[in-house]
Amino acid sequence: MGCFWSPDAIFSKVPGVLGTRVGYAGGTKEEPTYEEVCAGDTGHAEAIEVTYDPKKVSYDELLDVFWKNHNPTTFNRQGPDIGTQYRSAIFTRTPEEEAAAHASREKLAQSGRYGDIIVTKIEPAGTFWPAEEYHQKYFAKKGIDPTCHI
Picture (cartoon, rainbow, N blue to C red):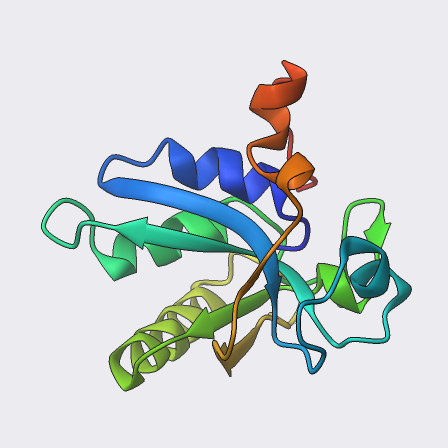
């Protein structure tokens, strides 16, 4: 969804989500730092890892939260945040997640909700690297109301 602070706050409030962490996915460097990811040389995107109870919330419902809370038509940006680390991406762990992500993207594309092409990438998850502690639950630590660049 671009940045990771807002999605973390959003997904944390979804009933059935057991936990979230912010971090980096989709890149090539092991144990990247925020500064390295922001420099754009690692190939990582800011991402969140969502742990959930599938008896209380489905993967499809989580995909709906994803689509409703960011602009999937802006290439390598969300609002004022620009760069490959802010790309819209879904990182999947299983063939079932991949199929569901593709189906949900296609359904959204066919809905006509957006006048532009959906640029969200669907990629294998690979290794998720947790971000530095000061990024975890950032809005709560700072006492800031979560905002997202839609």
